[in-house]
Image (cartoon, rainbow, N blue to C red; front, top):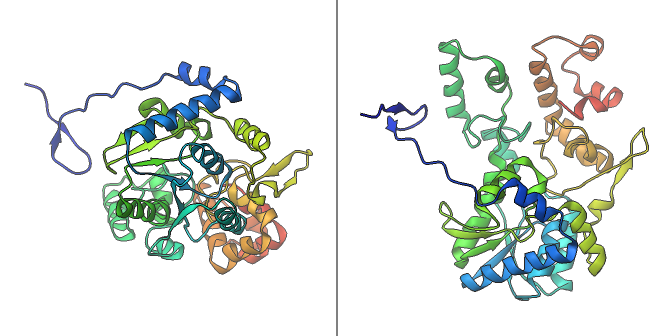
Length: 351
C-alpha cells in the first residue's frame, strides 16, 4: 500500500500530483529569442491569429506601458475594435495614465477601465506593504488576523526565526496586486463574457515569467479563471520592443524618458511602468523606488514621510541586520526618518 503523505496546509492526506511536462524547452526559447524582429513579428501574428480563430470574444489587458502598446498595435491589424481593458490600480504613474487617455482618443479604442473597490492604503493596512518580492511575504494574500495567528503558532513551536521572524515584525504582502489589479480586471472580463485575454508579457522580464512560458506556452487555457491566455510577445526582448516602436513610430509614455546618470555616467531610467508604490524589487540595485526618488521626488517624499513607508523600510532594514546598529543608527537614531531623508536618502534605495 502506498504511504499517505501529510499535507502541511489544508486537507489531511493527498496523493502526489503528476509532474506536468513543459510545453517548451529552454533551448526553444533561446532559439526563438535569437530570431530577427520581422521573424518575431510573424511569430506574434501567428499566435494572435490562432487565438482569434479559436475563441469568440477576446480582450487586451492594457497597462499604458510600452509592451502592451506594441501588442495593441499588432492585434489591431487583425481586430481593430478589440476591447481594451485598462487595469487602473489608482496608483499608476501619472505619465502612463495621461498617455493612455491620449491614446484612447488618438486610436479611437474600444476602451474599458477596471478600477478596484478598495484603495492601496486599505490593502496595506489589512495585509501589508508590497516589498521584497512575492516569495517573501507570507501567504501572499494572508490577512493580518490569520498572519498573526500563523506567527503566534510558530513562536509557540520555537520556529519563529529567519525570514518568518522579520515578517512577524514587518507587515509584508503581495495582496495589493490581487485586490487592485487582478480581481477588478477579471471581474470586468467575466461581465463582458471574455473568452481569451491577450497580455504583453515577455519571458525575458523575469525568471518566473520565463518558467511560466516554458511550462504553459504562449497560448493556453487557465482553468482557475476559465479563459484562455495568449502571450504573443513571449519570445520578444526589451530591445525588440523598442525596435518595433521606432520602426513603426509608435507613441509611448514619457515615463520611459525620465531618469538620471549615475556616478559612472550610466543612464538609469524606468524600464517598466507598473504601480508607483511597488517595492517588490527592493533587493536589487536601481529598483523601482530608488529611481522614483529622482524622477518623482515630491511623490517619493509623500510616500516615505506622510504615508510612513520610510519608517517601515528602516524597520525592515533593522530587522534584517538582526538588530545590530550601523553607523547611521548610531549617529542619528533609528526613529528619525526625516533626518535620514535629508542626510542619507540613498539609505531607502535598497534593502
